[in-house]
Image (tube, rainbow, N blue to C red; front, top):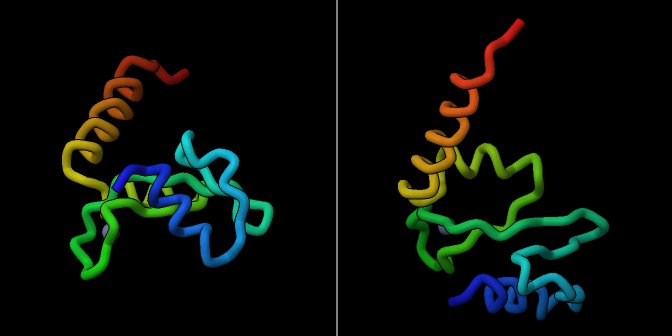
Length: 86
Ligand SMILES: [Zn+2]
């Protein structure tokens, strides 16, 4: 399932407009949510998770695919190490 398909499926039953589905975004009750790859291994998981901004960090650290988790952690620690603090 593509990301846009996941968003369209998610929105279909609720009648939510999917104007930004191709970008991986969906607006739910005035809040923008983003679809990220999911590796939670729950039954019925479509391989995507739809997350509010405040849920993204938790997802990246605990339920994102290992490759995405590693890339995220590597990128953050690389920047943390190259940014001297006063
Ligand atoms: Zn999942």
